[in-house]
Length: 123
Image 1: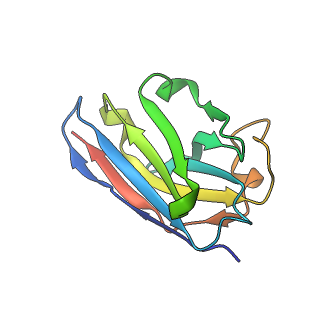
Image 2: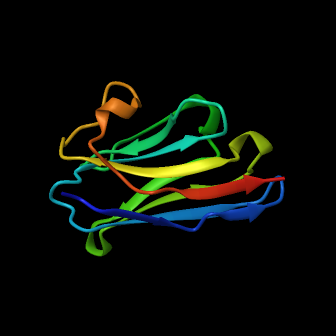
């Protein structure tokens, strides 16, 4: 069982930046990692994912603004978020799955392990 702990959320002004972190208890079952977000009254939305080989995918709304990366030595996943907008306000969740490759789509069902989330508020 992989435990995931997010940090780095907070309140930021429009146009600002935040970097989220997610520490995994083990990486050998977390070959594919992702970030999701959920705002009030909406479904959980896939934001970005990174595969074992470092290949990445993003939802269109964050392309060019968000960057997903990982540090295997530190068992840590990151999400650098720039040019933040009010519509980015949400609870952000880290997710992991044992698969080695990127999922065909950023769907919640593609990931088996989840963190508790960290709140991001942009105003």
